[in-house]
Amino acid sequence: MRLAAITVANIGGLDRVEISGLSDVVVFAGPNGVGKTRLIHALIQFFRDPRPGGNVRIAVEPTSDLERGAWKQNALDTASSQDADKLRAVLQRPQRRNRYRSTVLNFESDRSIRQVKPFTFSWDFANPYEEDVGWDQSYSFLHDRFQDVQHSLFKLVESQRRKLAEQAVGQTNGVRSTVASPHLRVVT
Image 1 (cartoon, one colour):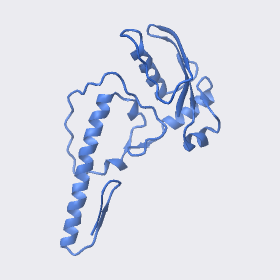
Image 2: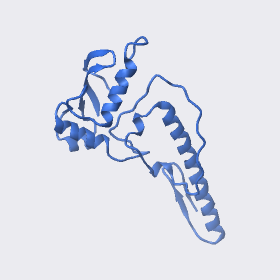
Image 3: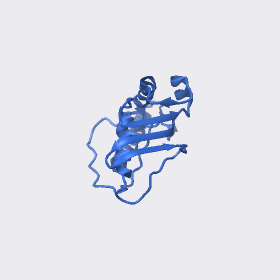
């Protein structure tokens, strides 16, 4: 989806902001203290639960067949409760890590990477590309997503290592096996 228009009223020190004719990537820039962060936080909060009649109103246009099929119209305007329901249904559906579709990606100006929490050990290392993630994972701050990516890479390496070990054990027992993933394919 693509943001076509944004209207925000009475958010922090912002009386009213109306923006239209947006491109595929929207960047808010300006001096400190003018309300960029308040505006972004209001938009992210709105995307978590789009409803008409609040301080935020957006219009979005479909950019994928999934959206066109679900909406059956050229644009959604969240001033309409039916359009807000359609947008909510698309935004809040389950997502897979390797198949993000129709979501919002938040790149805030705070690019600091805070102390990364250690990965909690588990005997079960599924391929992280196949795991479900929260529908609003991409709304979170960059430092939180960085930690998630780091842990996912660890799980990916560990799951591949275990698959290769299982394959080696299978060979020693005279069993022919195949290990496959989106990024690695080993056939014996």
